[in-house]
Length: 73
Image (tube, rainbow, N blue to C red):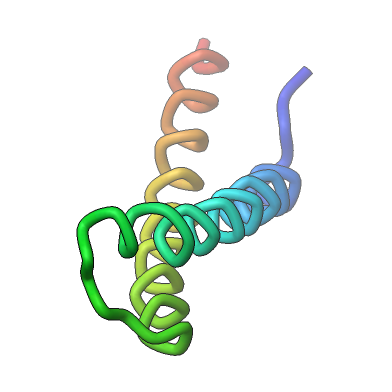
């Protein structure tokens, strides 16, 4: 069954949000303290948000590209 563009976008957004929360937690409470990198919660949020937008954009277009390739006939 083929996903619609909206369904693909929703899936990418849910995926990205879950990864965002995981990345925020890992960086703030594991990576930064282990490597002794001072970072505020606001800085962490901003940097992680940029990467989340990148993930949504590229994930959506990669999904659409594979979907197009798979269903072209």
